[in-house]
Length: 421
Image (cartoon, rainbow, N blue to C red):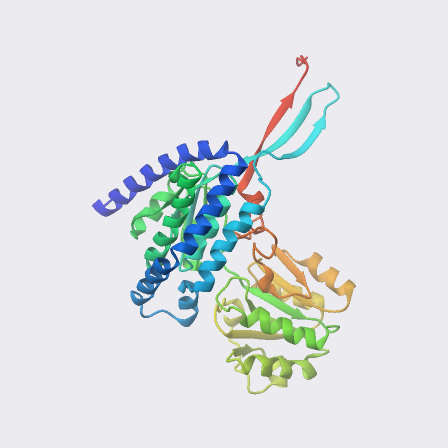
């Protein structure tokens, strides 16, 4: 290990030990203190908006070769700072997830058993580009009684630091330990490596970023990971779809924000309606600058569409590009999704309730929607106040990860003198 890596490991260990002490205190903190911290942090975000935007400008200037989609993810505006502040206030309004009785039952011997929600402990958050993730993650961890160590990408280091300063102001105002929310002070990749090896100090790693980052985390981590590697989302326009609804949903699902993981990357359209509807869908999106990659059946209807290569349906574009395939009913759509999808989010547009049920019940994906845009796969839209990420694994949590998903549980067993025979 070189000197830089050694220093990064020392920084991580110091941060993690401070976080563990803070987590123990935060787990016992009453709701009013946590809510006060969030509201004071929201005020601090608004008050420091000029400093946050200046830091963001410096970040963008320091990375001039960004793609349009990446720049959009990195960019902060006055509106996005206000959205972060509102997000903190919304989390403050949510019920406290800690200490809830999740289940209770009485055994034949008279023992009462209760399953009680409790924080996970220390969360390590590794993310790229989007600095607003720092505020969302900090808010959710604080409210759920967890300490968090935030490690943003080098491209957002100044922005994340400015946002963290507002969170620290909120913690101080509420008398809570500032070490409950920490930010890596270095862009050295060795800090991430140290986080991934910090079993016993960090309880859960949540990566949020591109496939390369998430793959590295999942391959190297010695700590449990909650993640999704890709957001390869599909919108299936069924034969019984309302055409106007399909046009509105697809436009939003693809183009509202092309760089988010819930953006639709592939349109599946039923062969029965494709000749009449596909040209309209293509025209709608093309008018807004969208490009396409289409299979042979789609190109037979719209010959000017570029042909899809073998890899296109397996590509998360994160850009104004849409893959298009014509399918023969629900089973055909599900087969395409199983072959190419990432188990993130899929939508069906149809007026046929039986077809919708068959589609939703046939999915392995973490989120399925009926007659709605895939871009609703978002913690705020689910009523979670915010989200710390999307999970597509099979254990602990799936879909948007909010307050409840940042808790585990313990058991309380209440007796009246019982002894085991």
